[in-house]
Length: 162
Image (cartoon, rainbow, N blue to C red; front, side):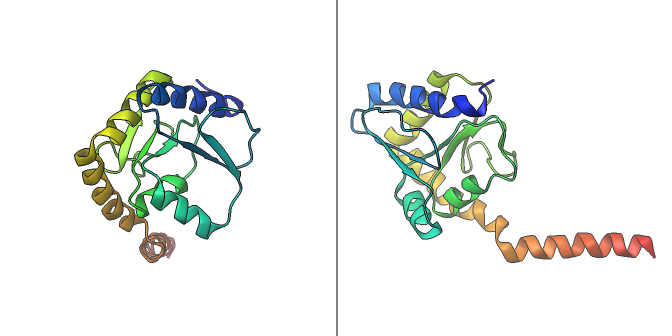
């Protein structure tokens, strides 16, 4: 298991493996983290939502090797932009579906993550298929649909209390 402090180090280790196979790849790290100088890694810190959407739409893949995820918003946002995710089993399974909007990696092994990332980056046909599926998958998380589901759930329980 990788702790939250070690997530960046783990991601950099994954990136190192990917970079050894695909030399012209770049990693963009979003959020507040300590800059660790690594070739082809850019740290952008916290950014406004419109810039985040722009980065998601330009990215080939979203990498999330976390050991805890709440609802999985970054995966949904990436999917809505058509960007597949390679992430851990900590991401809720309804949010990251293997072969639909990316791949779930069951173990914290940088080589396993790197293999999946390289496969997605090098296989245009696979990437295009997941790109289309991502956009469709993200539609189920539209805010209007989620609100409607909550209203149905609340109505159900209100009726049970009567």
